[in-house]
Amino acid sequence: MLTVSALSVSYGAIRAVDGVSLAVPAGTIVTLIGGNGAGKSTTLRALSGLLRAQAGTVTFAGTDITRLPPHRIVALGLAHVPEGRMIFANLSVDENLAMGAYLLRDRDRIAQNRSEVLELFPRLGERLRQSAGTLSGGEQQMLAIARALMGSPKFLMLDEPSLGLAPRLIGIIFEKIQEINRRHGLTILLVEQNARLALEVSAHAYVLETGRVVMAGPSTDLRTDPRLKAAYLGG
Amino acid sequence: MIEFLQQLINGLGQGSIYALIALGYTMVYGVLRFINFAHGDVYMLGAFAGLYVAPWTLRLFGGGPSFAGAAAVLLLAMAVCAAAGVAIEWLCYRPLRHRPRLNVLITAIGVSLFLENAGQSVFGADPKSFPEIIADRALDLPASWGPFAMLTITVGQLLVVGVTLVLLVGLRHVVRRTRLGLAMRALAFNPGAASLMGVNNGVVIAFTFGLGSALAGAAGILTSIQQSSIDPLMGVNAGLKAFVAAVLGGIGSLPGAALGGVLIGLLEALVVGYISPTYRDPIVFAVLIVILLVKPTGLLGGTEREKV
Image (cartoon, rainbow over all chains, first blue to last red):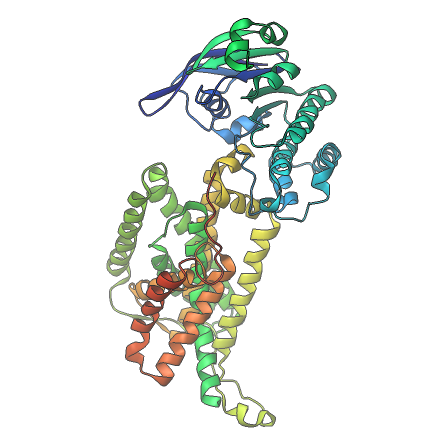
């Protein structure tokens, strides 16, 4: 569904992503793991159009999206839950959800999506009128995912959904991610530092190091790979 | 006491003008984090747009001053200014979107100087008398008001305050209840996140300029009703005062801009009434210095949130 070939992205003179190729088949969860500064977030930011790629092509559902601006890419059904969540802290929880459905015109569809995401994250339903800036970290992550789902995406990119959350909350968020994939058939590209967790929920994984793919394969294989164990899974 | 009330009434009219202009500064600051120094000159354009369309609309609505004719002048001037605001943003600011913010700030000063000088060569540098688009006269206050019947309240003053209130309510509706208003607020908080929601930031920024400029155009007409004389440099002083008002209220805050405008208008009237007209401008600009020293976020502005 998403094909990336030889993608390169630079910040000034520094090449953060260097010739990355990957593929995410429809209906699957694929993960991108690696340490700090490996280029995982930069890759996602280039895929959603927030950063301009210097080289390479990105094809989504048959369309070349390499040079499209973010709002055109979202319109094709590729949603990005960015690192740091980037919820609108000056808006209410309900207004954040409304922003997620910004491109939808069909009111019935919006109402249906709203009730679906509130069913997925009941906690948000109790806080609709509250300013989003007052939510806890876990609730903000739920809101960021719910907001992305409001637009009826076909494909979801999640950047570090476990970051800064307590272990119990991480468990809940990852259950929800799997549920979204199973129940709604949504394709997911998951970026994670927590490699163990990412390999558990995904079908396929790519390991990034200093902007390059250094390992790739089915997640079940990578889980037992001695090199990966040493570097990311704590021996 | 009556004297004091009279000064407040006089100040409220001028304060409404400042409030309308200040809203444009604060809205643009909200979405782009820069001060559009050409904004005061858009207000001047509004007055001149009114000057040119007034004879035409007056004829259309029966020759003499009328509320329908005045409303037509107001709406046309707002439309002209909205178009001018969008054009200025498109031609002068948009190409500099990804440059250092100082570049666009200096460009804004350049646009301001351009409009002032082009105004003098196109419209003429001498003051023009603005046609009477409504019959402005003092209201006869009923004798039963006792000493308050001695107050002077004019049709023009009522109209200025009334129209300003209507525009403020309308603006509030647009910002709080419409899809574009929601996008404006989202964009003001985080442009990247807004674009990830599908917001075309360029369109929303143009819309913001159009909206703010339309309000400045309305202010240009409302001023002309009260003062009857307009000139191409009228936007310099009014623009700076409105900028002070926006900072006083808290730059980025819409209610703050409205409040700051009214407060500056009242302050001016009191200085003129009780001290001396000579001190009007120095005292207003002293307010800017004091507010920046004591409370840079202004009366209603929140502390600038750290951006993620």
